[in-house]
Length: 486
Ligand SMILES: [Zn+2]
Image (cartoon, rainbow, N blue to C red; front, side, top):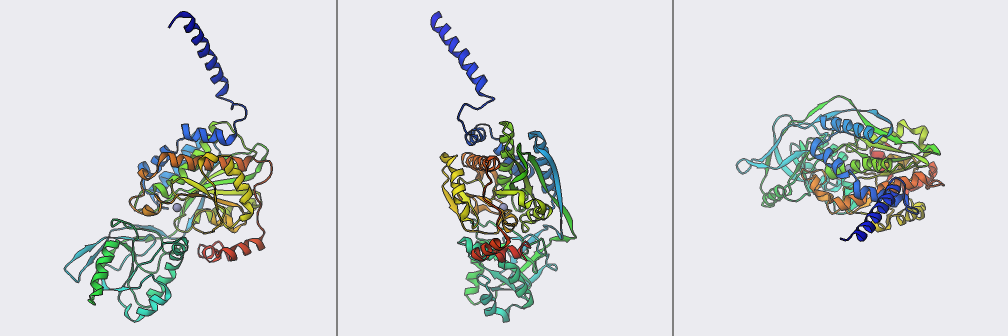
């Protein structure tokens, strides 16, 4: 390199440094907040570290467990480090405490063959080891129970639900509590539910909502073992199973939501809620359900703060607990903040793992379509275009929705999510860092845009409109089951 060239390149280097120095703190002219936020998330986002902290370092976070408490402490510490305002816990009561104990089952008709089972959460222990004949009840619909009612006394019922569609899934979630009461009345001792997961994986969830104890001891049984039982039953043989479940059930306890804020610069009294549930089930570390959503909420806060962006309205970050027991934390939040509901502009919720974002669930609100399209056009390269109008009460948006508040749930590719949901295999490796970054970027850019737009996003529905929406989307029965609807 000769001197002239060196001088010229030095000049260029100095010029570039100056350019970078002036560009870094402020945005280059014309760069939108959405672009700055997405850039921050993709280049410097800490969502994968948050995911690893919650699911690798802490692990399962069943509401009321040590893991859940450690996760709440970790979130508070991170909110402080990020520099959020008004960080605090909002406690709420849970009526029944529950702790998993040993659970074992064996097929005793042919020797003593162990069966792969795991207890559902918030289900009782068996009265010591119990033995009974296995009686199949199909999908467990009322007519299925009627068909075998005479054989249920002293029996262990086996149900094989099909959960192919969202409708079927929601039916399964919302009908098992009543099924168990019917089975108990008919004299059944316990219920085994076929797991729909691959490779002998087991599933867990509560049966009742509002953390009430289920009517019967209830276990998930590997579908390979269900096949074995069914083949033996098909030979018209009596198939007897021994079941020994040792869960511990106790009195009420306190859990809490953890919240922190970026106060608005012009309309701090108006609030955009960005939330996800921090709690998980306890067979695995709940990486996709829902350390991913929690990590996305934290990164939304971190990215906006680190860029020095201050929106017109307040963004309130809420990590809920008690979601798995029937959205208890978000229901408690809405009860505690009822006087703010008119000023709550929207609730953004993430709870479908880390698969790539495809659009938004508007939960039965076509009136929001134009505004959602406008939001998606600000981050068009994330590949989101879909607005799903179907409504369901399966996550923390439900209580907000019943208040008439616009709720957006991130619509994501579910391929990686459902096979491992509530299983031992819901681990960090299921999250693709790039797809996950796209989710976080979409959540963060949307939260900021809704909080910062001059006019309000959507509007709160009247009570009459909410009733109409509930009837049209058939969501009222689900709201009733979780206690957010009369
Ligand atoms: Zn979830």
